[in-house]
Amino acid sequence: MTREGAGEVIAWTAICLLCVATVARYADRGGPYLQPARTVLEHAGPEPHPLQDALVVVPEARALIPRGASVAVVRARAGQALDDGNYLTAVDLLPHHRVLPAFAADRGRAIADLPEYVVALGTPFDHPHYGIVAGFPNGWLYRVQR
Amino acid sequence: MVWALSSLVLFATLGLLAWRLDEVRSMDIAGRVSVALAVGLVVVALVMYVESALGIGWSFATLGVPLVALAAASLSAVRAAVDPPRWPRGAAVAFGAVTAILLYGAGTARMTIGDLLFFWGPKSVHFFHARAIDVEFLRWPHHYLMHPDYPPLVPLVWAASAMLHGGFSYWGAVCSAPLLLAAAALAFRGFAAPVIGARKSALFATLLLAVTGFAAVAGSAAGGAEPFLLLFEIVALSALTFGRGRGAVTIASIALAGAIFTKVEGTAFVISVVLSLLLVKRFRTALVVAVPAAALLGSWIVFAEHHALLDGYTRARRSFHPQRIGYVLYMTAWQVSYRIWYLPWIAALAPLAAGKNFRRAALPFLCGLASIGYSIVFYLTEAEPLWWIQTSAERVMATTLMCLVVASAAASE
Image 1 (cartoon, rainbow over the protein chains, first blue to last red):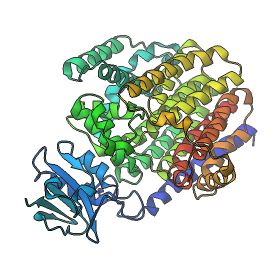
Image 2 (image 1 turned 60 degrees about the vertical axis):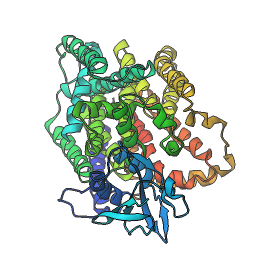
Image 3 (image 1 turned 90 degrees about the vertical axis):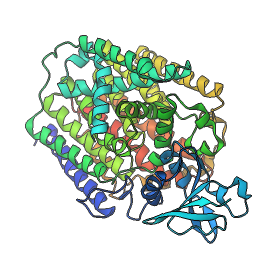
């Protein structure tokens, strides 16, 4: 075999191996393999992506929140409103609303400063000044009671 | 997918002026369209940026009319191709198969980057609604993690796509990644075919797509700026490696301006290309390709400074931790094994061993070495570099890998 031929054999072998490696990486990220993904992050890793819930719940809640209203998207844990990276995603998904960081919905804040709406992901949001508006799979929408 | 494809086709129309250049006229249709796409992306971003800087809001009249006029002028300037080299059937099937594998990954959300939801998406959506580079949005303190002064090409292009389609599509953004990578490989093939032949150029284009595609999957690059950056980098490097005429240098200048307007790493890449050109004694070319990119970057820094957005470009003032070089090298080397025994590196470099013309391969090889250097330097500016290495090394080293594939192809002449 000539040197040139050897180079081509190496390149073709490399292409085949890289295709196999790519498919193996897809398999690492879990199934199902032939169903449409619900969100653009559904199979981003072997574990559910932290933003997956926001991508599913916020678009559903959006229809119930008036334009211009203030909103915080939180993941409630031990009585605290945590951000978990959802704030920037909420800014993305709610361009017509005034999105506030999760800490804006903390229990210690004055009632006048609380966001009008809270979208809670994963677990219910236990806050004395909020009443539930709607429930979704893995999320809830609350409105402040002033 | 329709969102991504129709947007990219429209942007390519804006770059058809490039078809007048001899180097582009001699390409096959796929190569010509890909080069036109790279040029068109720069054109649309530049028009939107200039209008925004002048305080002109984007509308059908202010943006649509100039772009349609430009597209019409470009279409009228199209000249017939000159004897384009054909794709061998086997290589065309292989290229299609690799593209299909990547499209499957993007279409089933298996290569999406979280940054799409953290900053590329939010910026694009808000620019689209503001009909301008939304300076107030970028300046808002809670949006700091979106990097206020980051180069704007990707949000601008996606805002333009959103204006065309009446809204932003996350799936469109994700699915554009394999299309951009395929376009990059096709443009490479267009420049390489007259030098290394139809068969070998098709083979290396397929290898290039397989290598960059795997790195994009491993590093979850779809929906981010990496596919755009790789398109500009590959077009520029291929033009400079395989072309010698004015047309090739013109295309490289435009593509490097695109790279510098896409990511901060684009600036480092342009510096690498210029230094490499100086080392191979192509002084005039170095100057010609550096000037447009430097002017565009300078104008963006002035824009960012004027609007109090400047942040990332002041990184040079930040601390440097040279004592961590051993740790950074070790962790980076481990991360870029891609957990498959360095297969992408072997794939990119092994054909070089069978090469003959190392003189032509010098430029891309030097660029590849320099790209490793600037990545390491970046990690040394972080007091705790591990997180950065773990989250970015597989992705940013795609640039190095593509340089090595281009070097291998050049050496096969």
